[in-house]
Image: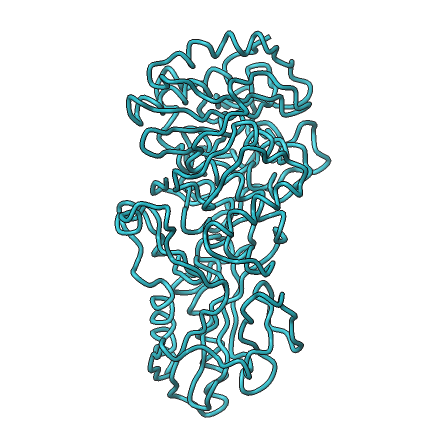
Length: 506
């Protein structure tokens, strides 16, 4: 489940904590687990959420940082060595009841440890790794999501077209950010100019939310998940400043909040706006097709016959008054993974299913993503998924499957997935691992373990990548019961990652 993180992907807080980290990673001097040999060009650093900073490359000999080169030249651990090193950790009372474990060599795929790895277990939020693979198999990683305002359907009206961006900035867009990449102030500026040219200074603003419709909460989630901020409502518009957390549940209707914020920005530019969200959808005669992932076009876009048409935009009525584009889909997925953002994951998953003309309820969307992963050549035997975020206890996945997904990223067969996975939360530094790997018993994993966390009542999980003391990159998955409670299970899982980071396991 999602915890509020103090920094978004690539945020200034991480940079100030560890100057040079992004560049070290680009040069494969930190646990660049997904590059198994020196790349011909540096790996791009994570997209920052503030203006980029020029970073100098420090010397490893004097940096004092817990980083080391990783790649095929590192000595391959032995299965016996891995089993012996991890045996005390897996016997920890915090994981009593038996864990499902998979450890692989990220270079060759060699199985180093399998404990009940074919037995399906509740994966909690590690499900997001599977969902990310399915989304990126279905939609181009470079896809952006358009938020557009068009004329119509009557001369006194304009319509806001929801296009899937739930990370809109209520003010100006921040081009170097993921959350807040597109801004309503920029959209309002475009619209106001067009309206004033036409001599219009008073309009009625409606909202067309026909893109990727579906239920706003899953039937398999406990009723208090939305109210307590574990997830926000699943919608196709939202503000970056209103992302739901347990400390701050999301607004009741993110789409209306966006429309209200846009109205305010238009008012600041001399346009009097009456908000009419009930009557905002364009009629079929005005809906002639606009691509949801690109700039407005002058020609219709064909949609799958089973998909709801998106209102569009060729000539009056329906001419484009303004449009802004989100950050790339792969960057949004990376943010969803590092923050374990349930609503963002579910929204992106639903959009993938919708674009394919598939049903967009939670279970159908999850089934579609599983089908996409199967199409990548991954054995999904034993997998049951009813949502994309992992909040439902009805989800079950064998640890082997999640290890296969991580190997898919490590192998380079899915570059988009590789880009998202290489930006997983880093132990002691970022995302849901910010305050983990900080104790003496686990500090060997700080800066070395990158992983997706998973927590539900009685369930704890960790799945990601690590570099051994000999510089060998590994992928690992642990799906565990936590009968003694979350803190004890998390401590044991952190010991698991730290043990792999500190041993050669020959």
